[in-house]
Image 1 (cartoon, one colour):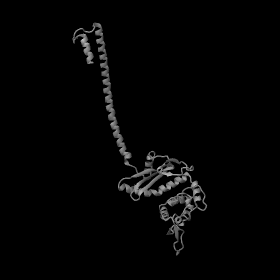
Image 2 (spheres, rainbow, N blue to C red):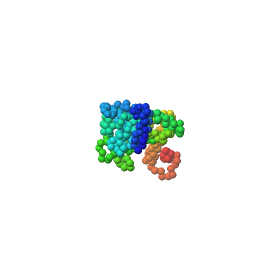
Image 3 (cartoon, rainbow, N blue to C red):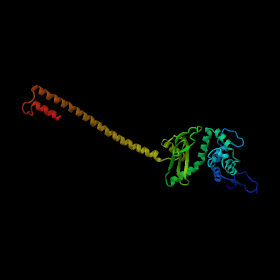
Image 4 (tube, rainbow, N blue to C red):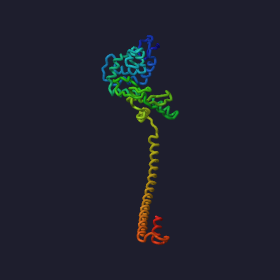
Length: 313
């Protein structure tokens, strides 16, 4: 447990008052909250449209509380209020994130149920907007030194209880070295000179999704977030296509020449076959007419000439 002074987000104090000291069991959430406000994340989420009325807490504040609970180590939503270190009792963290207080986990749950597709799309836009300068800076550094951009993309299993029936779109797949029920998260990151790894996007899929089916989608997601893609996609690919087209035309020309030669050879073979058959018929006719020779066949006799023609053919 740590002692931390109240951040500048706390209500203004009268001159001469001593800074308040608050206890927190979520020390890192305090600087993270200050950073989130500095880059505009908190301000952006406070504008997310959520069709729910405000009572003690605004629906946007409860959405922000859900976001804070994730790095706060809350494995389940009820851990916000019922965990070993309840987040909704940590006023130092609330001050750091610019909130007067946190709501009970049940109120956070009702707000999440009230969120629409437009609410989620607005959250994505806010996150993309605040992360864009960070990503652009790291992309520029990576392209300058070492001079290339290396992406990492893969599916990561997110298992749930095998007996659960309340998770929409869950399916059985290979997770944690076993067949489990759950989802596959398509994660994309790139090698960052400053941070080592910079996350770009994540998209859930059913648990039976396999990586080879998502390769193109992972590449498109990476290029959409970084705003860059290899030059070979257009220039070098076009050059290779032209080379292949020229080679194809040359091969087609040689094929046409061979087809002409083949037709000529077939014509000659047909002529030779007809001549051979005619010579055989002539030999048979002479043998039938004169009978088989009773002496040495003279080469210039009709039968001798006919047999010579058969041999030549």
